[in-house]
Structures are given as C-alpha cells and as structure tokens.
Length: 280
Length: 176
Ligand code: SF4
Image (tube, rainbow over all chains, first blue to last red; front, side):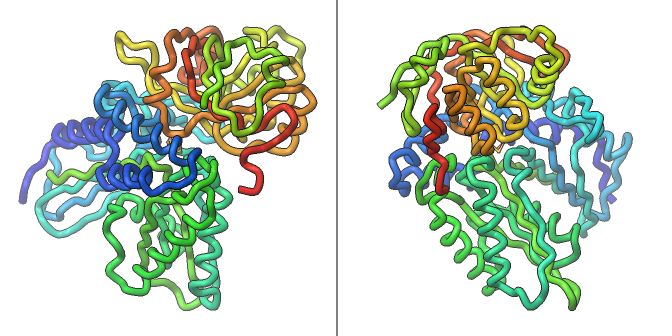
C-alpha cells in the first residue's frame, strides 16, 4: 500500500493545466514546424508561419497558445495499491483545475448548466475519467479541450456491412464539415467499436496519444496512414484557406464491439492539441 | 503584401477590399461573442440604446484570456463566426462595417454583407498569443458581468487579417 495525499494531486493538476496551455505538446510542436517546410500554398505557409511564431511567443512570454484554454479533460489511472489520503479525489482534481486557471491567467470557459449558462468562474468542473490499474502509482493526463474543434466532432452508428469504406467516408465528411472552424491543421482522434459512449471515449483517448505513435494493429495502422493522406488531399489547408497540410496526425483506438454494430466516433482537435501526462 | 487599414472602416475603404487581401488593421475595434451578440441583438429589436455605435466599426469575435498584471490583455485569437450568424444581419443593418472571426458564414450573412457593403475578415484561429501583441489598449465598455464575453474596446496596431468575404460577395472559402 502506498499513500498519496490529495495535496500532491492538486498541485500536479494545477501545474499541468498551466503547462498544457503555454507549451505545445512536443509531438504536435514538431509536426507543425515541419508542416511549414512541407506546405506549398503561399497563404498556407503564411498561416503556418504565424502559428509557429505564436507557439514561441506563448512559451517564452507565458501567454496561453490560444485564448480558448478549453474545458479540462482529466484521465486518471489509479494503481490499486494506492490509498489516497486527506480528502476526496474528485475535489482535489477540481481544486487543482481552479487554481491552475486562476494562477495561470487561463480563460474560464465553463458554465454550470448547459441551458442556464452561468459561468462557474474557475473553469470547474473538469471532465474526469477514472481507471483502476495495477501498481502503486497514479498516472494523470490533463488535456484542456477547445470547443471550436470539439463542436465539429461526430458519432456515427455504422452497420457491420459498411466496413472500412464507410468509415473513411464518414471521417472525410466530418473533416470537410469541420473545415476552417476547427482551426486546421487538425489532429483527428478516432474511436471504432465498443458502444455508443465507448467509441466517443476511445476517440478522446486517441487524441492524447502522441501522433508519432502508430497503432500496433497492422490494419488499423494502415487505416491511420491512408486517412491522413486522404485528409491532406482535401485541400482544406492551414486555417481552411487552402493547402496540403490539413491534418498533422490521425490516431485510431479500437475496442471489441457487438455483432450488430460498428460504432465510430471522430473527435477533432485543432493544432493546439494539449495533453500533459505525469506519473506520481 | 499587406494593405494598411485604419479604422473607422468607411464604405469607401470597404469597397477597395477584395477576398484574399492581407490586411493590417490599426485603430479602435470592439469585441463581441455569443452572449454580447445576444444582448445587442435584443436591444436593437426592442429599439433600446446599444452601448456603442456600430456604424463603420469592426467587431472582433473574441473572448480573451485574462491579462497578467502589467500586460494589456491575455491570449486574443478569433472564435468561430458562424455562431453569430443569427444576429449578424441585424447588426449589419445598423451600419456595422465589418467583422473579424474564423470560419465560414451562412447564406443570410453573405447576402447581408453584399446588401450593406460590409466585409468579413478572418484572423488565424489558434494564434492568440501572437495576435495579443497587436493589442495596445483594452477596456471593458459594456456588459462587464459577462466576464471574457464582455464588450472590450481595443486599440490595435497592425492586426493581421485576411479578407474572406468582400462587399461584392467574393468568398475565399468557396469551393472548400
Ligand atoms: S479550436 Fe483550438 S485553436 Fe481554434 S480557437 Fe478553439 S482552442 Fe483555439
């Protein structure tokens, strides 16, 4: 048994909220810089130049990369040998979010009720996913999600007979509908399988995986590669103003599913695909 | 090649702009996003006074992150324009000169842009840190209770934008 205090969790969450918003995740950072050299459209190149400068200014001057500092998504994997002491885990996480958004001068974008829409003033609550795993550690991923791109995400309940062709069609349709609203170049997180809600969660998890890591399943890896290619052929380009870099990466996560179904979720992220992971 | 545009954005200036032009905006502009739009729109419908004149002015669809002590503003990039589509024609009819946002506009808005000889400009989404450097002054002038969504009067210097829909209806996003 290992004891971890709620204070330690709060402090880590606070720091991770700030870090995620000032400093672009290294995988996305690398790809967006490469995109500038690969892009051939002049408007696209000038957009990417601004985006690269933007990342530098954000990191060096501690300004959020984007003013939409997101709704705070938290994935927490708790080793079953861990005992959390000193308070409630959920309160500790939300306290960390509140402190991070205040101390980091991050925008508070959360409303307490989807219809009444009153701002909670500290960006809480986060959207928290708990998982119990083996071991005596806690792994936390903080992924603040902007809604320009979140709003362009979609779920399709396909039929088994639809297969790969319909999956591709649905992904391309979603990317085209997202167009400039999702602030391309985008990162595409895809969940295939499970149930209605499971595929959405898989898609979100796909977004926090490094875009340098391909699926270990050969047929899924192939699909990731083909989709990236086809998305970039749409010509949407940086900021949706035309060009060949529309996406920086496509990550797919899968799960077993029912004999009658083929759930598909496509979670779109802008180039500000924030994710920070720590193990404590 | 950038063209310099100094506000106010008069009809004569708007007439010179073509879809695809790169502009640097200098002068006073106003922020408004979803909640502020709703209030301005309702005030116009009820024939109440609105907090500033829309005539020949530019609205920036933007809700900044908070300013650090000593700085003018936080990160300050554009938000998705289509969420304002419902309100925009009414504002254009009141003389609004132009809007800065990101993304496509609906048919009604495009029609109203042509009718009112206005312009829709885009700034680069996700470049909020860079864009914040062009903002030299910021002051909340109305709807302070809305927090980030309050109306800010901004003084900007060489704010980089691209003409997406010009006053003739040419549209940079067409066919994309
Ligand atoms: S979609 Fe991303 S880059 Fe665009 S405004 Fe939202 S958070 Fe910023």
